[in-house]
Image 1 (tube, rainbow, N blue to C red):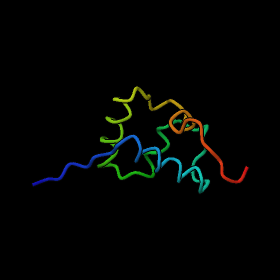
Image 2: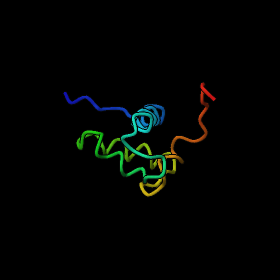
Image 3: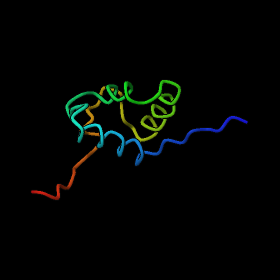
Image 4: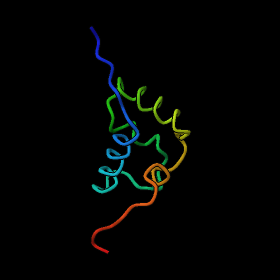
Length: 73
């Protein structure tokens, strides 16, 4: 039996936040830039979740992350 991979918005945001923190991607890049860091066979699940939450692949990663709280400010 194939197991369906579930990508929640929280998981996608956590992944994006981590990549931004590491400097791998910028908050100004389109969400589509994340596909390089998520296995191709799983990207379809990410796209479905983004679509459900009314995000477009051309939207900025910063839009996906929303407002962030910084501990060291």
